[in-house]
Length: 141
Length: 130
Image (cartoon, rainbow over all chains, first blue to last red; front, side, top):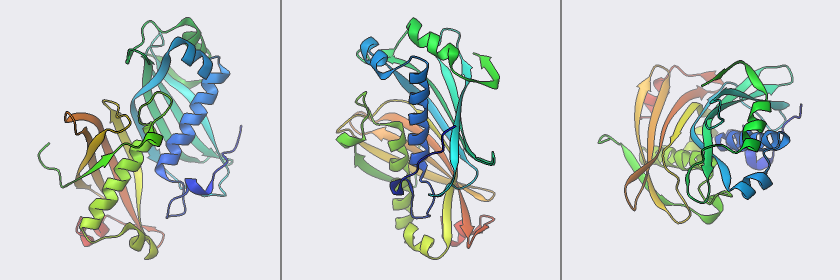
């Protein structure tokens, strides 16, 4: 578990984390976890495939300040069996396990050359998704 | 939708695009937020002045549906309307690409008010004439 390292530029005039930073931090976390399970930037470049988001929602529960000790727990909430559609949930939690925010993203894979949804999903990507940590209430779509 | 209260035209900058050459998802937050603040300005309300007075308008929830991607150089309009729902002011915000009027994003943004550290019941939005 790694606490977020927040920067001055992540804060807004209310002295708390700006909205767009939540999304940046979650996206970075997502990419790092995908990398950990073999879905690397190199693989995405080689296969001309990239993640594409259809929907993103965020609920802000408690403010996050510059000195807050917060980490993100990222898990797969839903997935099609062929990996062509997925929902990932990020929870921003304090050291005391208090929930600060939840981000849920719904996405797929896009062929970056044709700008069309990539199907079938390459085996290496599917395999990485299958190993991705899952929520307790995970379901196949 | 015919009942937009406000709209602003903007242009995508090169550095707002990601590795795929399209606008990064977090950037849309900035477009939406800028449009909301400009809308406040039309009501002679400055976000900064409110903050200085201890009146914080904070987003409690955002939902965005991505319909089409914007890319570098695209000109677009952020349009909005508002609705009071209990203690929240809800902004319905849509982004249209100007070249073909294509809907690129639909968003629903819930805003709550806090005055001197206390959650406001929503009357602050009436006071500010939103």
